[in-house]
Length: 400
Image (cartoon, rainbow, N blue to C red; front, side, top):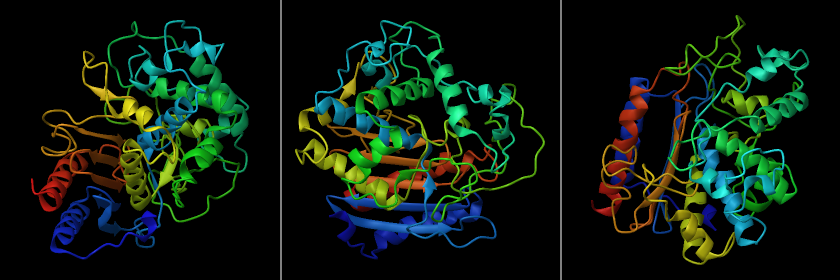
């Protein structure tokens, strides 16, 4: 039970804390958590900054928006479990499970490997922005928001997306994982948040990990780091021409998912929506390591290894099923992590979160930040921090 793993205040751990504190002071983020597990033992855990500029200090149990780390915490792992149970065929047409999906040659394996030809991203949330029954989401009018209707609009919009290319080339796609999330609900017979809770979070004792489903004016339970002040969020760098943000009072509303496509789906989506802590994310990574070695708490080892192994290596960049893999150079995982014989797997999140696992050294690195607050243009700090953090972790604990 990794809740009982002890953290030892070593010099190696304090070096990582100093690195994170330096980036906090430089403005790379307003809040952060980090947790490392090496060969089954937690060797680092730290919390930095505050939940908001004038708010309480970040604690180990404070929760952060994991953004696209959701793709492995929830969606990929659910697919792995359902394959192991014989409920999901990775090579069947998607429309076997989603008859309204129009594209006969796209399979779940292609969605997981980002080889479906579906677009990387789109302003799908604008379907709610334009609809009179859902328009109180943009700008947000708490208490009047009709997430049930906006979710239905989003489902229709997702199924209406046409590929932008033939299947094969690898293009990282939120649209693909939105589709996959809908597929998993059909196969699993539950809504995605319930499915993740029942099949992943609860079995792994991830006590501070969940989707935060929107429900009118209900405030989420717990302490959350703030990620933004408007709805929709301000465009990311390079997306300024795609949409504009209505004039509105700024409101933090921590605990509401940062991603607008996930927000329009009521906070529950295949590509984003999970909130967690670094301790839980590291515990999840350690569980994936153990599953690959035959723990069988979630799935059969051969299925886990199929998901972790490189997918379609002639499609570049090389990824695993649902998981990213470190690039040979210039990776956010740094110059050491994942460069051994077995390699490494992980995933990044837009809000400034990441999970990386070195399969040879059995090192799990969870780093969660809110680098998007107050500005999504705040990218230089996290781009510098991620490789430095992982290099230091590999040097201190694995002797690289």
